[in-house]
Length: 248
Ligand code: NDP
Image (tube, rainbow, N blue to C red):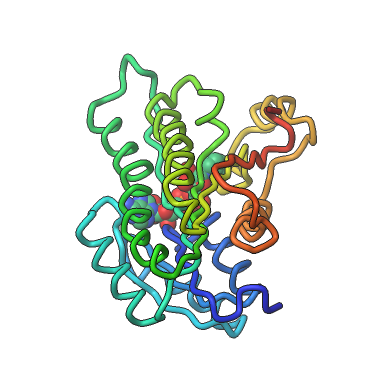
């Protein structure tokens, strides 16, 4: 597939999980991939899977919480690849706990990676995409950022913030033909969901009309759509990928 031939895509937090699936799907559709994570050595698995697909791939060590490091890495990518077409802000963490027991440290850690990290990367690509007069920014939010969740006040606030941030950026950059959208995944299969007891799994599935957890590939497919010209008239939206868990 050549949908993204000659285009450069950056995926943050792409050492594993959903970020890895996103990087692979963009590569299958012809994009040149820049994969990043906190430690460069964690990227080796994603890198070899991308190379098996025959993709052009660059690995960058990037902790998105540092504005300075982020700008430096994004500038390097722009110089090396000549352009940045797609940014997927996927890096994210959880530090769950009830509000009464939530430490300031856990609040700050989640807001700093999930929300400030998204701000840092988006700001860093803006000038480059504005010059090109084209770009697609996709922020991975969460169903929890739309509906809230007991025990995840910090995470829900960060993802709700990502959604409001996305809409604001979409308004600021639309005149330069830069689109910004968010994806709100529901429950996605992972090592964490695999480890749940049958009883807990069953309870979670009861809340999902399609009666199944999503897969990282479901999110990767949604990202591919929002990154492509097939969504050229869509900006400032939240795409819910949740098996019908919430309907808006
Ligand atoms: P994972 O924890 O499997 O992967 C996230 C990646 O981001 C990890 O490699 C992680 O590295 C990296 N990361 C963490 N902090 C930083 C940082 N400061 N800078 C750069 N990279 C960082 O998560 P998932 O694949 O499950 O989730 C991906 C995204 O999807 C997240 O934004 C998450 O909030 C969102 N999401 C996930 C859902 C799910 O059910 N899994 C549901 C809804 C949303 P490290 O090894 O250090 O943690």
